[in-house]
Image (cartoon, rainbow, N blue to C red; front, side, top):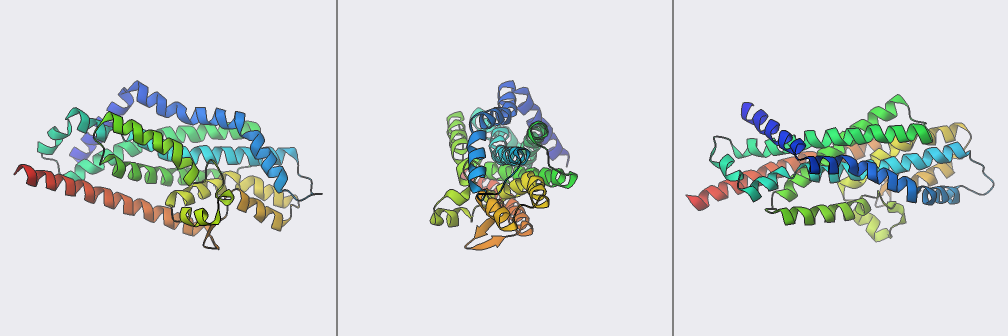
Length: 303
């Protein structure tokens, strides 16, 4: 435990010491919030209004609540993964600087070294992601608050699990990178592409049927759906209390990916948690196994 604690402390300290990387990771969710609120709020408003049956009136406050829920769920779903990639650069940086060789000759097992990188990246990512949660809750309170205490608790759990997933995924990817240029390329690719394939930028319901089936195999899809459900659950419940038709409410949930379907069958919340949690365990196990395998192969090459 002492070597693991020392590795974690060292990696976290170096991450926060790099002011450029830290502040870039920290302000990214804030920038996304400003951009989404500026350019997408009207798009979301038009989308919600078009989904409401003709002749059915809905208060502007409820529309604002729907918009803020979709905005913050999109931001958090993307940030949990992209921030994890930023916070997990220490592994690649150590290889680029040659520091990894010092760890390899030290009396530290490869599995301990692997978990040291993973846990330190996880702690750093969680600090930033929960700061983003606080910022999003402030925005929701200003624009339209319908969330209850249980919604906030579940939202925090969703962010925690999705950050676990993002850190595990980035650990596997970064295991095969060796230079700063490769880091930059992967970051750009993840930042540009992940939001689309997880349904954060554009609802999966708007994709083609074939693409929807492909995306239904990706764990990040269910992480986004969980965050969406708990960010928008309060306002959807309020709409039901005010007499909004149940069929129209289900159609609205389908449109914004609160409901996710796997080959035509709706996936319930418990199954979403099971899929995301199982994916985290499998990815962490695969990451440790790959790290140990690479370390053993390296030892055989030099023996």
